[in-house]
Length: 572
Image 1 (cartoon, helix red, strand yellow):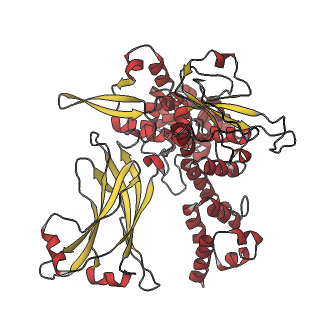
Image 2: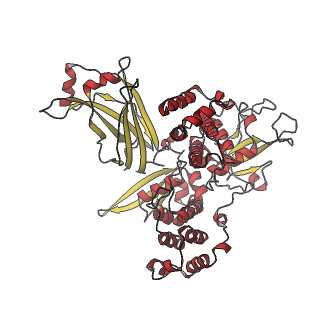
Image 3: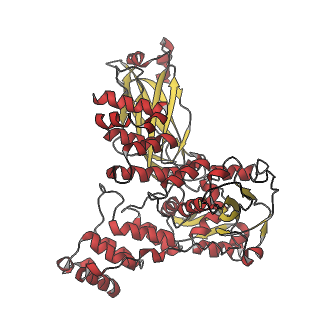
């Protein structure tokens, strides 16, 4: 996946071991026997090294040593990273089994130290012969990045950066600055504070640089990860820091997400839950009053829990009233938590945000897409920073504007136009506010290509936009197929990841929304490997044999059928 926004990845390579008398000399010098290819994961550059080592002089047994190393492409920033690694030598036959070892706790990597993490005695050197096929050994290292600082938005290729944020720090009686590269339009769509800063006619607008004080750079980096396409989850460890910054920079959507998190106090059922009164204190402090009653209901608080509780006493009068009302009359509670979310009007244009105009087809009256003469296009005016950060397809369209831009109905090329700057907007004809907007020659009208236009409608594209915009419309059973189809066509790996997470969460509801075969079809068609792994864990012999009799089973890819067959053999 592009831009280093994915939290996990695999380095897999084939290595040809060279065993000779000269190899023992490598232990006496600062050389490596092998360097793997580099892979970008979580915003960092990862690779592993292989050494030939003898760990004890009294017992000179040679071992293969393997270590993971982390670095960053920008040598001018400070960064830290926590990640777990699983090392594996792949066996090419049933016996012996794969050699596999993994770290139980995340290892710590930092820009101040270049050491790697791994194992000095991973496997006895002479045992490598058992894993050799055609003279080579297949080695795989899976890396999962759990926490980072200094990676996201710190390099121009993460999201097309056109501005920077400089955080001023006082350390040891000296002034230091931490620099974050950001996409101005992306940040302005989320934050009213930064929209005002970048729009005012001061030095910030001229130099595209904003200086901040009294902000912890590590906390700010966490905030950027939350709003980036990676969508770092809120946790009980970071919730207070994120709330503080979201409140300061007027990021309404993040405040809403934080309120939703406070209702449950955790992301997953197996996580430790926040104390209910800690949740109430945060909701009270940041005026998330719409979540108060839901927190009380989730924690099942009663009057006895309030008596003599010091945390209850510090709450404001308004919050106390909300708590008492919920305890006294829970059945009369009405939920209206959507009111805080900003409304994206498709007819209001923002003259200060660059946009990309995207045309999609409107369904005919018969609710089908056809080549009728009355076929029309609907124009979407999409925040350029958001669209390019999610879609590799549109990124290519901007970088290579001369490539095919055709409308299927008349086969004519559409020349590049000077377009208005805009907030996300949709209309059959731009309204008066659009006509008055400023012009920007760098932006182009983007028409969905002829080859994919028959598969995308305006309603579907609007549904996709509502998911990737700051409001983050939820993925549901109703829109999952649309999102997967469009994310695959428009090359949006982040959206595919969101869909995969949703489908994994549905495994506990098998038979209600989806059958196992339907989920396997999703995993097969869109290459959802993590979903497939979770499905294989719960499959039994009866289910595998039953789905093999289904007609849909015949359309599965050969690789998927092989996985199911291997699982069947394993269960027998």
